Image (cartoon, rainbow, N blue to C red; front, top):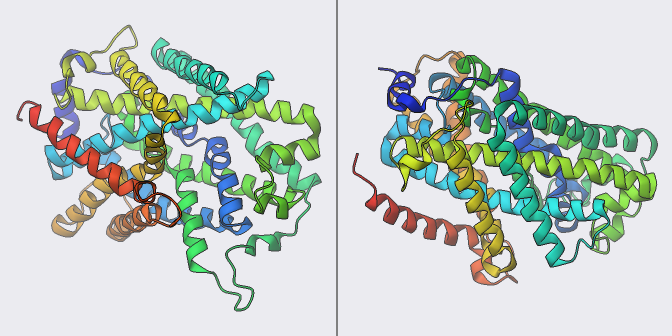
Length: 467
């Protein structure tokens, strides 16, 4: 019996409705990655900590992540199952290995939602003319955003498609449109500024430490393409549709992010002030300098929509992973979490559970613990990716080629193994303690949080029914 047939047999009355198309899967992955969130969440950090040369982290990270996307595309064409990372790992190396893959992913995504809700609340406050530095304002708006995306995810697939479609239009205006305007009309700096911070003036070669930090920063920008696999059992002809959605979403978003970043860097009126940390928000300052308050207000609206789109995609993805684990009896309250509701047969209880988890992490956003969790978030994606990537590489080495609808022929093994090596490198690169001035628990936050989650995972796993 194939993995797909096995999933259908176990689903019974909880079989999902196949109402998403290849375009829907692409759109969800596009929204999850979100060019606006991908870029503007890391832009200020990259400029101030590395310099304009942090831009080189984008093409390097894209090359590595494209290997991962191709490897995952081969996996999902064989195993088009809800829950993506969890299911692939489970079917390749067994239930326990798969469970910990799902466990890592389930923790990563709600933390990301909480973080993105804070960023979105800041832009929303600016758009509404409220004090974006006020904690009560930030709290109320962030909670409203989480409530809004939860409603969007539970009301029905058709409504969800419309929301994501509108968000993508806003993303394109806010990223591509702004980039074209800046490059065409408001270029201030020469492209040679991209050497600042990463090129040694004496030798003309790359300086490895800042370049690696730029790659680590860019790591946040190119995750989320795997979310198309999280809804595989809701997609028509998933063996062919989902691999394309993964690859195209990564290619489109990465191109937009790199283009927009280049345009903004070249349009910044005072790079020295930005590098010195004198400009709190270089993107907003650059937009207002060139386009005035009206232009800034319009662009802020597109930024808000971009953050909402990202949150919708994040919550949809994690809810499907929760549902997939619950269907297998791999979570507490499994029967409740595996229930599907309404004519659209949506995992409403799993969506609500994801919302509650996000609210818990949001409540921690005003503590030092949250900084540790936030540091873990980017690394958490790559750690989660490592589970199926390592399993796929092991299978390729020990068992050879497996037939799939999507494959790369003689290059399949090279891509699969190299993707795993890249993920090991990038996980270590992101987790590396670079700042001696920080408290030890923040410098080693990734290792510390991983250790805590691993121990907690073993405890939870011990109380689950043996399978």
